[in-house]
Image (cartoon, rainbow, N blue to C red; front, side, top):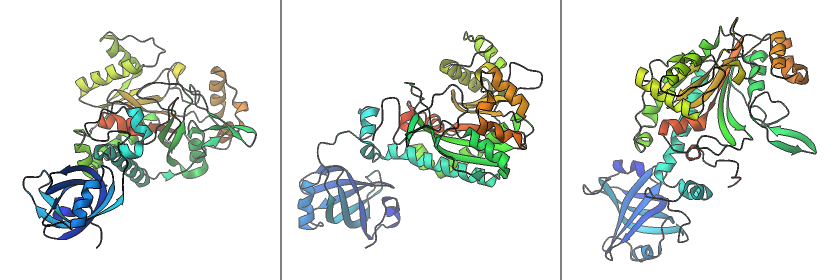
Length: 435
């Protein structure tokens, strides 16, 4: 008999089926025994009756433990009193793999096991249907984004994750011993994105790991995350990049509402699809925050508290969970961000906040070689020392710009999870190196 998934049982009423999965719960009432079985598609009540179930199977249930793997053959029947509306009356049970007891974590919805212990036993933690839904939603996000980029003329690329190239500022590199030579884990595909815009692809994207050697102990930082990076050539200015991002999020949220509907319902999340994402300059944002008592210097970036406060202000005034903050101060941006004409202390760059947390940084890049050299010098850098980066701009490069998202943060903010590590299957932070 071919296996039937639990989600397919409602179409099998009156039929004999074979279902396979993990034992979520067992209730033994002597002459009646219940097994709540779980597979990748959901859970279901099965019932063993002394008069209907094979005698050996009926006795075997006494020895089955929670989280054991079993095969159950039985008849699908209606049961209006159960929350499923149906149940499977067991004719035969086969124990495939017995689970040890006690379990090292509580993986039920009532669990008080802390996140660190749950990650230690993540393979048990993800058997919880709600936890599993986080990663099903995340998987849908990747699929929808991939299709969006493809539909809009972007080419997928895979860039090296062990490299000697790096231009990001404010983040340290992980050093690796590469056959006796010093090399680093990539902290950004930035150089490679620009390289292949100049390489004739014009529009490129990558969804891949990014590494940051920062000892940040917050609910929003990790040392390895999944970046969603894209770059566009032949742009007029940074507004074209924001237009593309706005279009991308409208597409993502619209499709996610339908494609991940049942998984989203587990989190009580109502997706609000923006018609338009507000664009507010950093100077304007600081004025709005000052009116609420949060003051920043002209050259400052916003801190986490400022971002949260500003997200609340935007939601109240514009009804939007998203907001672009534009024209960041030159003092807090990398040397390769372009400056607006005649504005020495501003950049053609932006952040996108989602529910009060920054989920991406983007900008129009400086493509003019001599200006790029001068900007690097003003940041205390010598472009001649970055030969492989500098040569990109010596052989014809179009005006271009791009953005880097954190897939983990998008998932966290969408589902309103307290800790970014909830949105990462096997997170890495300054202390965690396994599993």
